[in-house]
Image 1 (cartoon, rainbow, N blue to C red):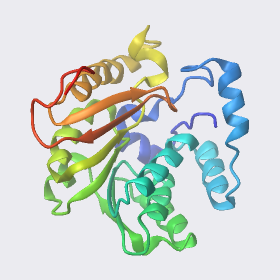
Image 2 (cartoon, rainbow, N blue to C red; image 1 turned 180 degrees about the horizontal axis):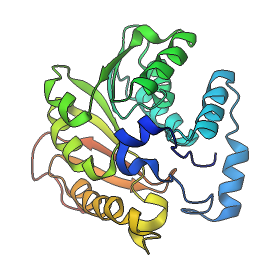
Image 3 (spheres, helix red, strand yellow; image 1 turned 30 degrees about the vertical axis):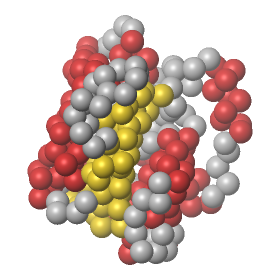
Length: 250
């Protein structure tokens, strides 16, 4: 689907650089004919999710692209994840996918500072019959994460780009060995690998460039950046430091 933009005043205040575009255009990462083919292939058939996509588009609420949210759900199901941490909830689009994946005995802990977003997400999750599987923590992620006592099987990061490195640093100790980290927007409309399109994108783009190096070379992660959505970081937590550097042998 096309990227979602943020225009709500409260969301713009709390999410910093995330008020900017997600994908700059449909062919920002892959070629247009490929993007259009995949768009047609993965049409939305779920009425509630389609409503959420339309709401996001109409109200300028940023959420993960359809394929990214589905990727998170598939990954959580494949890993039999029962405890997921989502950093950056918005209206609960990816939260809903993760809640479906963890099952009746699972839990998604999600963080957002906006009362307006929390109200919207609460409504959608309730209508989906999944509200009991989701615990919403109101506040800024950098304040909330240190207070969490939960341990997690999967972490999904999609919030203020300048804070990505701190999110990972704070949340990784709560992830079990063999747990999965997924991070959205790591190609940032192609800007991390090319020209920054406007001055107000400079801070977020430079932060993501630094984060990508930190992520790929983290001693406790086996990590890669995929050209999915707007660039998707994907990693597994390994047991000890020094088990990998780059993509050579273990």
